[in-house]
Length: 165
Image (tube, rainbow, N blue to C red; front, side):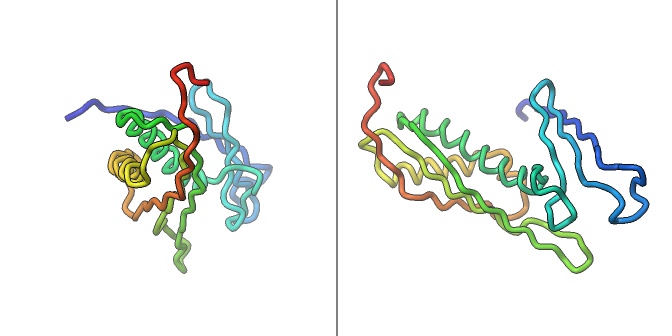
């Protein structure tokens, strides 16, 4: 068995107001996510559940974590394969179903990564790197729903020189 990694996150609810949870409408959903000395993340629930649209929802952060994990593994696999990635973006979407009783779950996340790589790299190789990244992503391997990736056409940049210019 490999090493274990532990992650500590502090979540502090700031939405109690003067009445707390006296009723479903009496309290705010605002909270602060603090991870070590990093800047705080201002969180709330999704606006559909009485949250503040200007703050991050757990659902958004969950989809973002899947996208970030894929990105980081893709970069690792590219470097290992000698592929020079000079740009990357993803427009990920997550779909969550809410049942009549109010409980729900994600049913799918689709990543739409677009990598910009130095010239001379085939689309087949880039597709293979995306598959390898998916197979290694810690978070995608931890969920019980499909995480699909639908890479957009790879943009080919001019080759990068050894000095990076």
